[in-house]
Length: 307
Image 1 (cartoon, helix red, strand yellow):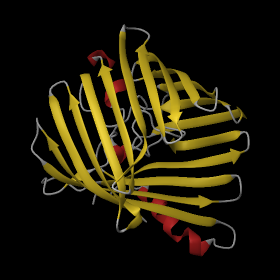
Image 2 (spheres, rainbow, N blue to C red; image 1 turned 60 degrees about the horizontal axis):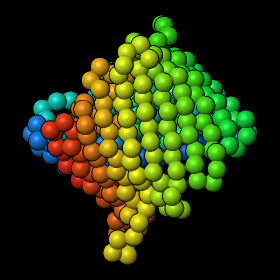
Image 3 (tube, helix red, strand yellow; image 1 turned 90 degrees about the vertical axis):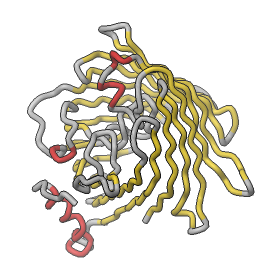
């Protein structure tokens, strides 16, 4: 494992916080382990694994410190490949303070790319932004979000370096408009372009929803569109989660498209995924995913376990 980043020492200190400050602070952590088979029509098949570690310290009821340590050597990927002949990477990608009240939250440092759900048009959940996030909840149905920081740094081994400039700005409004419907709309400045992003979700039944997402580049006539369905069903007596969508991505979106979750290619694409619990217990599950984008096919199948 490549643990050469000096700031990793800061993250390691979180392991000892529970015993050192048990009287005042509360230490919590979570570890996700995944292994998968990745078969693509344009590359050699491979076996991969992923470790995601989430340590945090609650200083009091409002203040907390968070980190994120994960395998992988790319902004949008957190997998290492077995027998690849490359270093088996492991880097801290986030380290930030969070202040939470009933009116919202403030995050400062190397923060996550998301405040809640990760959308198909949102930046990868394995990524990071060096900056500030402010979320203001007007009430339970309406919220505003502002993020200011630096995104133009996609190497995990440099994720915790201090930002010297600002190249990322996001202003977002989200609302729940009925028992079944919600939407988001945001204006973004990132990856050298200006964008508007919108998302609409409708729960057509208690355990299922349809969604529509759109990104439009404002300085060029280029866009990404997504329409899909997700939810839960019962198969052979077991609860199965499913997620499927169609997308079209214009190539000129560039990094704004490539830094999103599970990017495979430009053009027309479809994706379908299913997962369910294993007999090992509720903390383990199997998953299968099929993607087809612009002539490239991909099959992912594996298991994951949470501690």
